[in-house]
Length: 89
Image (cartoon, rainbow, N blue to C red):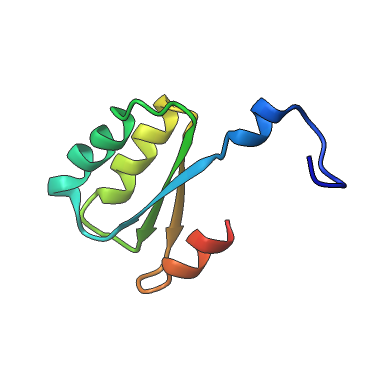
């Protein structure tokens, strides 16, 4: 193990995965997208839904999923501001 690292070898092999989904006016397809990510066999991931100012109810759908699954986080932004928060948060 390189100097300065701690933990056993098995822990160091696990890499957390974040799936970033930009959301804008996508109510029609959003549940299918989220369900697809949740159905993956890799269990250790975070789903980051970034609502880009949707007014069609997409943001509310994101919030409903986040209340049911701790792996899901939602960020609500004004239109046009989704990329940077997803990369920082």
